[in-house]
Image (cartoon, rainbow, N blue to C red; front, top):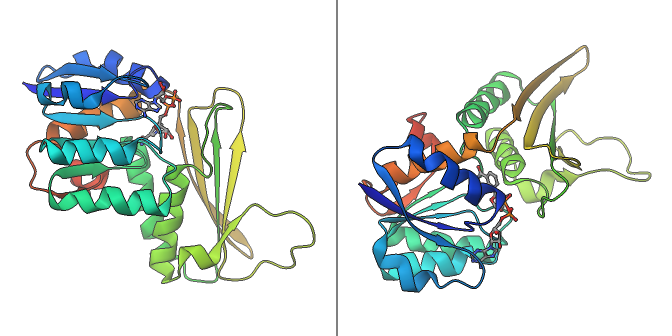
Length: 244
Ligand code: NAD
């Protein structure tokens, strides 16, 4: 039996994880942590921590996991570069699955995006559009950032130099290397992502729409069962799904 501790247990994703846990017979919830609770006090009850909390919490969660040699699954998004760097250091001590999106469909979208970018050369303009519910705190979504990173990597570009977050005013013509990233917010949208490859005369659009958080929760729980069997290192959902 793999024992998991959830951080962010009272949130939208935390509740979805608790609801989906019975789908996995070999998994048991050993702790539910939210603001005000002490992860250090319960960590020894678990084998793996599943973090869907806040970008300000993940570094502390990773430190405690490293101290007690517990595996970690991170779904939280919106971390600063410094926080990302600090969490990544822990890969030397514990196995970590860190994924901006745990759905099988989105991980297939990652794969398709890489393939399309490789096939459709640099004359295709690249734009990403994402939409999420009105309560989402970070923008662009972690998934949109992952998609942009894939596009930049295939085009051999530095994302921080070519990312174009929205447009307003007299911004001039589109430059050939820019990667547009646009965040829409409203209602209860669970998560939509479209990657657009636009050339003169044709346009290819790859779209994924999530309609239930259970898709992320089931993926994260699958990752929790997988990560406890791994050596220390940093993994993503494509490793869990065997897509690499
Ligand atoms: P939410 O705001 O509904 O829930 C977050 C929960 O974390 C809240 O209950 C909050 O009280 C708690 N929390 C905040 N700080 C904490 C701390 N220091 N310690 C413990 N708990 C703390 O948000 P949500 O929609 O559940 O999303 C949570 C995170 O997961 C966000 O970063 C979101 O972008 C991300 N997310 C990732 C995926 C994925 O597949 N990777 C999918 C959906 C959401």
